[in-house]
Amino acid sequence: MPLTHSEARAAKPIVQMHGVKKIYERGKQKVEVLHAIDLDIPQGAFIALMGPSGSGKTTLLNLIGGLDSPSEGTIRVSGKQIDQLGEDELASWRASSVGFVFQFYNLLPMLSARKNVEIPLLLTKLSAAERKRHALTALELVGLSERAEHHPNELSGGQQQRVAIARAIVSDPKLLVCDEPTGDLDRRSAKEVLSLLQALNASYGKTIVMVTHDPKAAEYAQSVLHLDKGSLVADPPSDAKAEKRA
Image: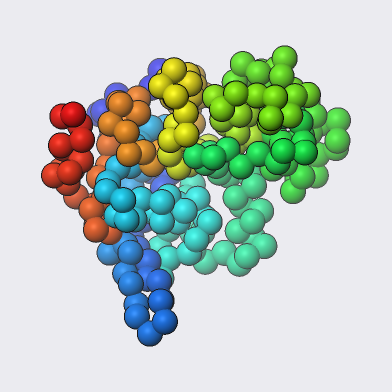
């Protein structure tokens, strides 16, 4: 069962961010994208992260997933301080600890669905037969076992995103980070993908952090965080309120 609000508050944090800043240099100019973020995400939570374009949502998600490093502050995921890891250590940690779901699927067109799902396992010591077995299990979980040998151009957008989710869960990570996972889908396919994410959270205990601009997608999460101009805010910005009313 998914966590209740009180259970989520009491659960041990899987993500702990303290004083996190991200600063980019553009020539001689420094742009601070995130401002001293303090954030704890409970294990087993399903969080939607919303905010206007340019508010820092994807930057925050990339920091949580170890795709980027903070300029200041500390980030712990499952007790490991990932901002102190070297490049090779970080790559190994990502392969085993985090699943990534992107807006545009990022599938390799020359590979079958099964081969795409196996990609994260190439960094492990599993044999080819074991990788195949894990990939087929992941595809079965997302309802695509019969499409295992199909290539991306033979699949619908919703099916491609489900393959991407299978790839994200194939190494059985505790944490899934999803960047606009329904942004390129029609409403029906979006509902299927969101229901799948909800099921992975409820039935398998995956912690999910999902960036979305869509209030209807955010309704699938247990709670919503709002970013505005690089800071977490208690209430959504006025333009987000207007979008929700619409």
